Length: 301
Image (cartoon, rainbow, N blue to C red; front, side):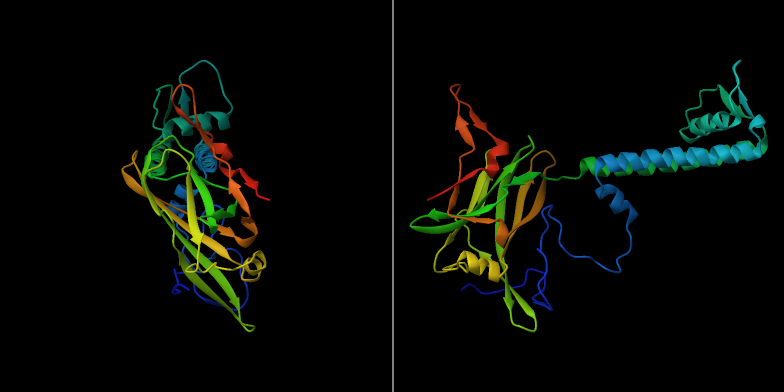
């Protein structure tokens, strides 16, 4: 049995917990007392939500300044045209011109106080677009990988024995190189009063590859040196086994390393099955990879 260690999740718990690593790669840990980091929150939120939030803030700020201009007197805002608008629309459009510093020249303030408020709004607009531009640049310049993990890990026949294996594939057209995989095992030992969680490194048949154009099946042979040796499916359930995965690779697009986390719990491990090959050679001499079939496997009799 390999020496146990703690990768950073703790070992002693009052009762059983949920999975350690969620399906999206986040840790199943709620950090209480941490200060809210607004910039980090905006950078990490989904793109559609970010665009909606920025757009909503822009509209609300212009509505607020429109009411301020109406309080100061919409008659102090001069339109150079022959048509007339309601005071709110006139104030709102003036606010949009001022906030974005467009300055078409067709609308302008007339009195000193309105000019002062317009100047302050223009300064706020500069700050808003500077921060928004920084966040957009941060979102696009940050390297990230999108790997697709097979839905299940498998226990398959392998080299006159068995092996735990799962499969990954790059979902993006970018080039990933120098891929490294590290796989750990988390086992819950129920001692009655408390749960003692133990961790083990799993030795891989191939822990690194230089190139990653196809799918990669990561294999751990279950031999006498494996912590999974002679364990049954019932043992996996009783010990609440979870396979923890850390993938690291070099992103050629950004010239930086990227990291991904994933895990399989005991109920996501399929016994006596093997993966179906998801690539083939064509008559043209090219190799065709079917990314969506990375999950496909067949059960063995």
